[in-house]
Length: 180
View 1: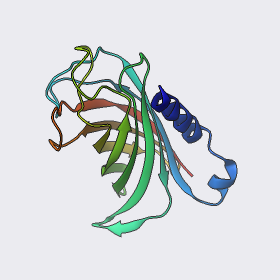
View 2: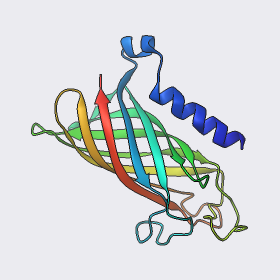
View 3: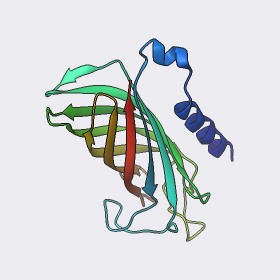
């Protein structure tokens, strides 16, 4: 329950950040979206948790490093399940490549903390093995202007077989982004 509260507070902080932080240029972009929960037949291979919507919120911070034609920035976010199943908070290193025609690609790697079950106790939930997991996001989108974007977003979280069990979880959906 404490982790669920932490996730909710983190999400609120991302959606309504302090205006002085934005004015100082700490946050480059805010994103919000709706994701399908525990999508089957993707990286994790199967679905255990019921169909539900997840609300995804994310802040991409301004400090950046140029790398392979794109930029790497830190990203802090949360995916909150609307029916009380597995939710998580994550911190990633996000590489993003922007094209002149408005199309962008984002890839990341990081860590996440979740509130789901660790061992198989409830058959309606994934057994994720450990509280801290790897987080891998992929995003493909279109930037309409200097501020607004829309994208398809995929995220995978698992323990990468460092602990047994390792059922993993995938989410897929759409996000709106606003760049400052």
